[in-house]
Image (cartoon, rainbow, N blue to C red):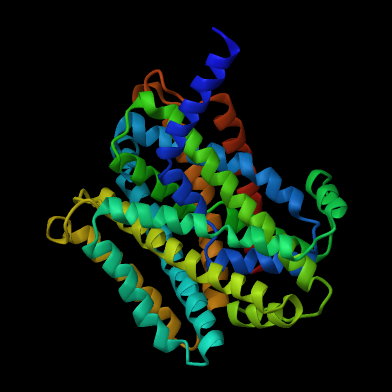
Length: 413
């Protein structure tokens, strides 16, 4: 075949793949929620560029885990709770979704608080005045919109997060230092560095993203012949997610590292950025917080609703009307309401919600990895489509890392 024809076919194939981008890209964008933005920016503010290499290392782990769960959903046509219940134990499924639900609701509360705090900084009004409108907007999109419309909205919002790339460029980092810290490991023994590393990796590998992508692939009813497109979608989504995180760390490092700024929440972070970086960078950061929250909160609530509905055999899916999937939508709405309640309890701060959600995630991630590896390598379940060596290796590596993170988290509690 002539070289020109080969290039033409490859371009056409890639164009077709780009048009089919969906769950993987949404999952990647949702990983950089307001809680994640705060974490990544604080990592840069407290450790400079020294953890960029860790973020690079986490990328293949994310790809392997998300690829594995997507493949399981496509081959079996079932979600993780359904398969776990059928082949292992319903009690194990219930344990999984209980931990997931609590962690997700805490994160929803932290994300809601983040959006409300940004509006507070921009307008001067108290955060409580923005919680109900934000919740109402999300509920409207989900309860009264068509699934394809919601999907397009989510993908569009994902694209808008490129503002963080712009913000990193505007920060004018030292390129030589950035590259050196990206490809050469820099390990420090200080407690601040270790805590920042735990927070970053705990935010990067999130259980709710596993449940969400598996449920979305199942809902779109893709066939095994589309597995390559799904893999491409997953790679794009995870690389995009970590590119955004990479830029957030750079921005935090350039603007805040060594400044002595006391970052406690989204509000203090935004206020610390403005006088140093200028109004435009501050507005970009604020816009990104709002957009990422609107993207992540439905994913958090949706992953909870999918997991609960699949465990108890309820009809689920955003393509269904509310009257046809009452249990699914009841859990979805309930997760949002409880997230708001957390923000109204003065004893629970957004920082506490973020911290404890990561502790619960640390407990759940290793369990999820073990279950997905058992399923994906079981020929009785997967047939000829068992897991690849790449997925097995990096998922196993992620298991070791997350077990270590969980042990350190418990030690520091």
